[in-house]
Image 1: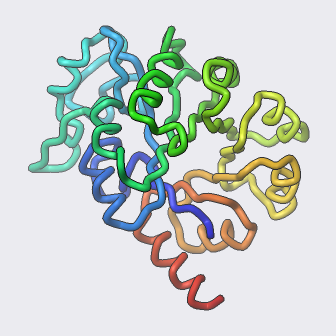
Image 2 (image 1 turned 135 degrees about the vertical axis):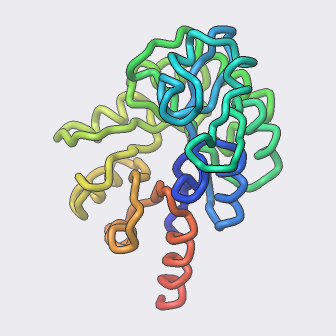
Length: 243
């Protein structure tokens, strides 16, 4: 059965990358949660998508220029009237997710900024919480993924891509990855089959409309990353009944 991964939590209805969005994703029936990590000025693993604070909080500037205590005090739900959510770090998330049968897809946001030591910090925390079997590490930065796999070969890795190339299967395997995470609009049945022929899993992003979800299911992808895990959950239940 196709896995249901909540993109930044249940971000279609709740403030993205917040503990609220993560909790609501689980309530909606997801199999896993996709989230993004950066490094703060004092070396904390901050959960946020953008390099800058501006879009999703009431702060301003780059994450890397602030200590986590300052960032945590910002409102990660300022776009949602009457709500307040703090900015979580990876330790807080792990404290919450441990013991649950939830897969965590952790994107290292190293494709624009080079956070020195981020791979080691993420690996150390994963090992501390014993979550090696429940984590997939991914990035658009292949060098970051190489460092991660060299540090801990047992961790599952995925290369994120938004462009297709004929050698993408060979390249992903050469990095030691277990998955390819491609943008869903560039996928076809033959491309899914091609990637699977390398022994790789295919998790597509970010699929929000039911017709597109159904198309990906019919192509045979392994997982769908979506802002609406509730929609995908209902669709998968319907598909299961039909079968």
